[in-house]
Amino acid sequence: MSRSERLLDLLQVLRRHRRPVTGLTLAGETGVSIRTLYRDIAALQAQGAPIEGEPGLGYVLKPGFMLPPLMFSPEEIEALALGARWVGERGDGLLANAARNALAKIAAVLPNELRQELDASALLVGPGKSLVEGKVDLAVVRKAIRAERKLAIAYGDSEGARTQRAIWPFALGFFDHACVIVAFCELRQDFRHFRADRIFDMAVIDIRYPRRRQAMLREWREREGIAPAP
Image (tube, rainbow, N blue to C red):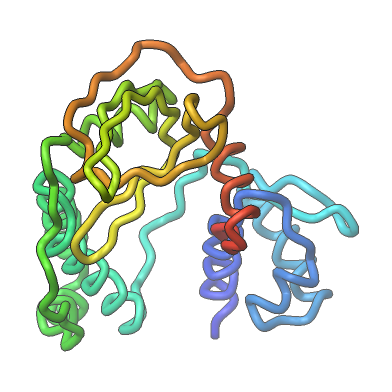
């Protein structure tokens, strides 16, 4: 691997980590010695990369830094194609179209040989049940999550009993045939999971819920024993 490739690889690793990460961890992920890692960080900082931190405390790449165009490996091409095809098959209508559009945009800027790799990817999405969307517009749910807004819903459980809930949505879980809204429920005063196809009515409450979405997602992950996102 050339030095330029190694520096770009380090930037990509830093970009994946949203919180400070130790030099030893970065060295392990990039496959270099700790001394080389420190030299590479210094080189990137000298070139203007906004990397904050120091030995013993960890390093973080400030948000908003744009990486230069990167070449994709065959595995990365296959991962992009498979992920976009899965969303295109399993996501709701708007999200499925967005996945197909994103894949087309990526293909448009790839060199010809990599574009051929993308078009000829042999990883396919197997048959499965279609997503049951019900009466809920998942695009509205996603917008409420991004804006940290409450939702008022009429919800039916597995036995058909209906309740009125005010929830604080902070995540969506996509399964083969159903979408689950992960939220804090004001009625139960706890985290709850709501199948979108069992919501009979929904309205956005233009009130920002009092906790940050990231904090609730982190607490929910810890409670469920789910590893945090890189």
